[in-house]
Length: 233
Ligand SMILES: O=C(O)C(=O)C[C@]1(C(=O)O)C=C[C@@H](O)C=C1
Image: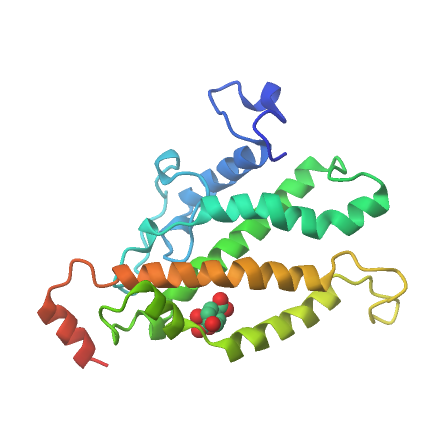
């Protein structure tokens, strides 16, 4: 599903050279582009925009942003991390239980779930920098390390990971007839793996995108426009 030669005989007939998942992403994103999904500042396609059609609906108007968010797209990194780290971590328990390590043959339904996960991760990582608090230019020219420490809130991260751990316990559990998690049935996903992936990858990448956005948010503005923005709030 994740390598170029997996389904080459069926996919590589019309010049397409990617994997099963990349093909499924492109097919999905072609229709989503037509309904203007990628006009939204927090939505980024995994397929290059040059390969996607224009929307068939008229544009919506979004609040103005200081920097065009389409130029900041870390989806290639998200895709690679998803395939190499997230998929093995979250499928391990179930595929071992079935005795089919890394392949249960459900390529269609696995692909649709992959796309849901990838879109949710991408939205999460790309939308945090757009939060109003963070786009305000109150620190016009700090450098990346200073910016990273300005946006790092250890207490927020700790609370988020504690909440995530609880959530993963529920989502990863088999629920009994009373709706409570069944400890003895074993979990589908290990909560500590979910927390690790979040701590080691999702939060750091979110911060990288935030820093990148903050560094470019004043590009093209004159000093008087920057002064004006700083006065406004
Ligand atoms: O909530 C914020 O303020 C963020 O910047 C987002 C986020 C995160 O990725 O969840 C990133 C950095 C902070 O240390 C806390 C949380």
